[in-house]
Length: 454
Image (cartoon, rainbow, N blue to C red; front, side, top):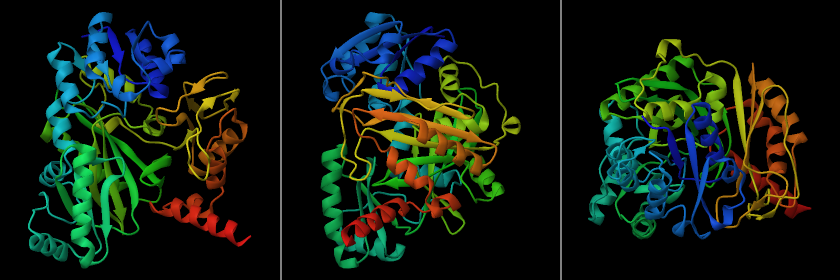
């Protein structure tokens, strides 16, 4: 058991974790960089410790400074949030060696699922459907690489085994371009992730991005909490998410969800996690597991009524989940729009001081944000400044509420992507559901062509 948590993160997720801790009667310690000294979550924490300058490598990624802050504050546990060190097995190990509780899975599970080849192997063993391709790293022999790609069938995608965030991958449509793609991706993987291992699999051309949320304890209980659709994305970065995934047979989702829960039991997974799939032609194909809290967790909370962050903390305290799969019901529909401080169509970040901040409200509206009038958006970190979530009895009602919420939201002083979100809500294909992961980029390209013609 612990009664004080150090939150090793920043922004809206730091405030979200802080609120969950306070509801449980757990004290919080906010670490922050010099750039975030005046942030709202820093002011609201029970304790606040500056751990370094603005650069992430010298603050939020500085493991020694974070552990020193934990000991100095008397914190007994560390919540990593998402991003930064949340999926770093070495950090999780260091937290445990320091006598602290890591609020997340154990290092072995992080390592297994963080290596895409090992994860694919584990999922196949658990009966989780995977994208066609071998569950082993690519060999060095060019002839063998060519044979593997030929057996899979073009197009194929070459990926870094330790990759993520849309980096370390190349799509190959022609055999003559394969070896060059392997060479470039291997070097990118070595530089970006510290390991050159690659794997190869079938490239699905028009898939949707569908997720299954899981929640597990240390007592053998593993639950799945419904589905999410995160297909509206640009350069592998999600823009709008929703739950449940529209237009997919509920029985098919149940079957895949049960296999995800079984996989968690087999690897001894603990805490919250997300299985990510590509969905095409009525079939699920596993691509990776995120061993942490997801940015889009609020849409699952809205449709299940389960506070995922609260359960994360309770599980880390050693409690068994007091939930049972048969009692979990998903009802209604939820949408989440990620509001970023960036140009809405070029996506260039727009740091600066927020001069006006007016949040929406009303039935079925939730805003997760650490911002307020006068707050500064620093140039050193991700540009996410808010998540607007709406919930309705139906998908149409969730859309209607989101349209009203976005019309009410007012941000001045920095540019935001609010105009993009408002436009997407009126997009006929998105309104109909079941758009593929390339839809937003096609939509943006058509807009540029239209502008060029004028």
